[in-house]
Length: 307
Figure (cartoon, rainbow, N blue to C red):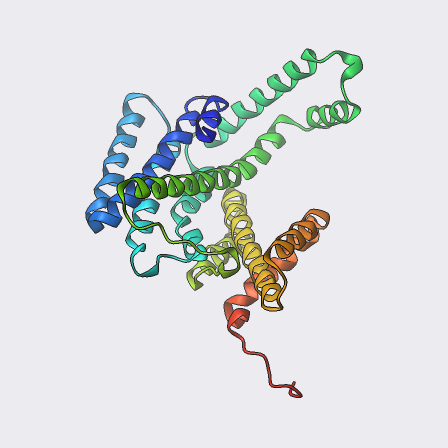
């Protein structure tokens, strides 16, 4: 129902991804869990369908590639289900095909123009909302935000959307992948298969290969021109988010090891993030990044009296 309501509230053709992308993940996961590498026929067929949609309907390739890549992720997850299944950090790393697509979006033909059309649509919807509310009932914050938005040149707003939309699309697609895995778990129960593997948040640890997007993002930011800056920003933002979650996992595991009940741990972490979002995320990102080398959760306490 959640996916259906999301589809109903999203403009076409993006609305289709609310249903198609989770279905591709679930289908790929279950097929590869049962048939192994043969299941990669599914993303190949979806890729052929994406090319056909591009030719017949005129959909841009940067739109139609989301579903085949989601099926690849589903197949990847299914192959790892045996032997304990992937950890939560490894499952996050499996989203790297979608991260690559998100980072490449600003370079895709027609994407900057699409962001211009998006800006025009947002302006029109803002006007419609403001007109639908009586002038005396419009909050002052709305009026001030509208003035600031209108004062920004359209070209600057388009550049802002080019920076922001790839990150938003990646986060949205990651959520749909999680929904697809949940659907696969339900289907596995119906089929009488073993339950899908689970992994608590405090075990989140990205594999060492997750440093590659971060390093590539830094290299693009330092050594390339303005054309590559949106791609660099996407790689850096998502990498920082991933290592922020890893930092939170390190803190959670530390609190749990000291005997704090899980409920109080969760409430404490949520409270700290809520009241100090702007500085706590960079701080925990540094903790998460240092965990790559130090692996805090495997460190043994020093004997009493030793440094």
